[in-house]
Length: 169
Image (cartoon, rainbow, N blue to C red):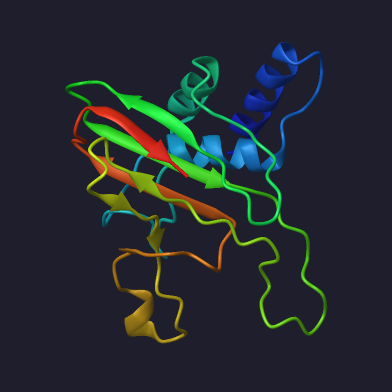
């Protein structure tokens, strides 16, 4: 994983006059390129899956990523075209969050939420969320689609998506 992260950093630096990518961008490319193993979505045994270095580098080389800075209560929108015959449509949002103040009620300072709207606007997809209750039975449950207010990575993964233009917010 470290070697693949270094390759992504080098490739980015070569395209951006020596500047290095953010840790969040490298993290998102590594996670989005991973092969899901085990149950669908992330899980406590295999995380987001098995590293697929080639896919992560190919996503970077193809420019299949976006970076943005947003302010409090702002919304970032992006239209994404999915061609006919696509087998998978996976989007990962990652960001760097400052540490919370000591005694804060939540560790997450900046809670970003990702929503994906289908081409016809009839369906809204939420990211995968794991049950984090500290009980063995809860930790073995499958990921569900829900609003995530705990993590600095969110992922939406669709198998055999309908073709068309999706709107990400």
